[in-house]
Length: 229
Image 1 (cartoon, rainbow, N blue to C red):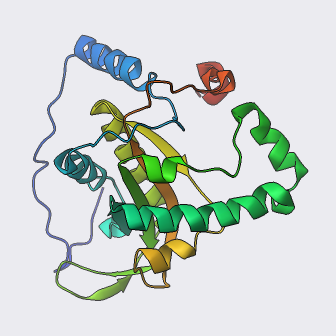
Image 2: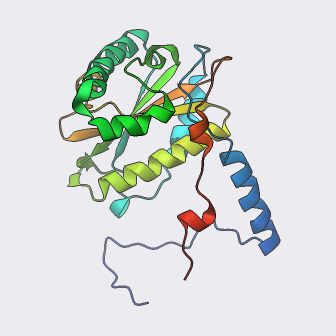
């Protein structure tokens, strides 16, 4: 492959890749699957504290995700302050009341019935940490230049996946909460209007009495999710 070199393109040798024997690759793939398949979305959280440094380490893992033009168009607002959590709960439940009262449409509400969800979002105050994940249409580069970002939804989604996996690996439970609309989070988190809130990630220990809907354990088979050519 021929690459046109420019002053901006400064390649370095691949720094960290270590090739593994095929059997070790198989073992690691199986080990990761065995870990990640035990991840479950939780709606019953304990108020037990989670050290901030654990959250920080998982955010660093999220920050290694690939992104369009390597612009890293994400920002994580991490909220542990009880007053802010109360504000978020009040605003989210207002939107959720409208959602469950008809805004969603009957088909969507029917799809949610097996999950047992409703407009009550007590976990927004109970869980020790809320992470509001924003995507930025524009952001500053390392040298301070404001620039347009590319593939923002895709990049933010990948980083969120990394974050959820890291938090699960650390022994924490998560919930991806998406009140609709989420514009109120810009004001509460003091983010500019050009930022978009994609997900409100609830993080903490599951409550001792936590349950999950049986429906959530129904996962498609490999044959259903993949096609090999």
